[in-house]
Length: 406
Image (cartoon, rainbow, N blue to C red; front, side, top):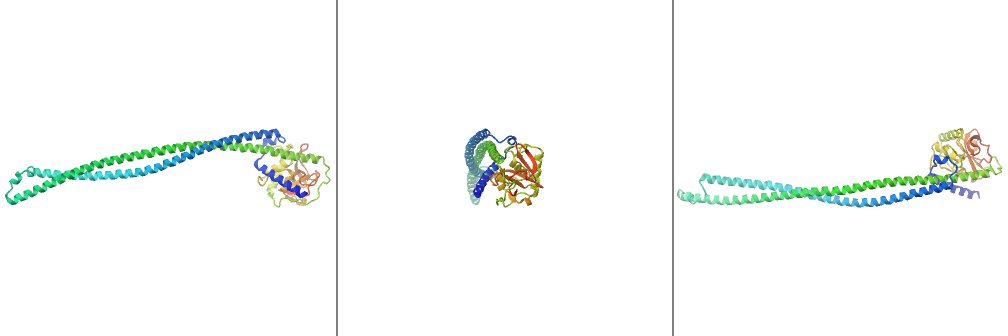
């Protein structure tokens, strides 16, 4: 029977530990008695409203992100076009350079042809007129001179025709080269403009959508934070209410129960096999509890500070202030702290260890918890009537047979 009760108690401990991981009660809640169901219902409505707003924002972000993905695809296509245009530009530049080099070469040929024709004209002038004139033949001095003049005339006529043809070909090639150079230069300019325009449009569209996505993501993050805050607030209210009702119910039963023993016999109840605290942590926890008692703060069901406490709330706040936090240290009720601490015989108690009181000697019916101060004394949040006090560890009946080290 006892083992079943302990299993049930441990299950409750796990559930309450999970709840405590989600929320830490705020100071404003601690100033009031246990939250009412109306307060919890109002907190649920606020949480639902935040959840709905976060859902709307998530949908908007999803659509904007989808648009961004589409624009990213467009930008990628534009980048591909950009790379293609760069290749076209490189080809155009190479063609322009080749055409320019060819134009220079053909212009050199034209210049050479001009020089040849100039020499021919000069020679003709020096030799006295047109070489095709029959007079130059008739004025030959003898047969050999006639042969020489005819040969020279034929050679000069053939050279003249060849030079003219070369000159004309060079002029035509130069003109074609210039047209090609102009064409490739125009292609180069067009490709450059195409590259710049395509990339500019894609980059601007993507940047604008990225800005919109960032804006919506910031809104969603804020709404999700608001939702989490509202949820934590609601969970905190529910947790405080359940803890307060449980502690109050056990305390009321204890107040009307005739407890048989000042200290209950040891029934072999176990706890943790390890501890989480150090001497420094325990010393700091005792100092905190002492300060709250000396400040004469009131006893409020479900409260855990900063200016009101119930018995387990004082224990929780003391060790949290000393440096223990979730997951090592959670807000539990008195009975669950018994399970969550290592058993310590009274002969080995140290300041900072916890003392427990049960109205029937069972773990599940532990109704009160205190912090051992040393020398048989303790700091405790006693009751609504008495408040926070410094007292003797045997001043309350039903002391469990061992303490608990955090």
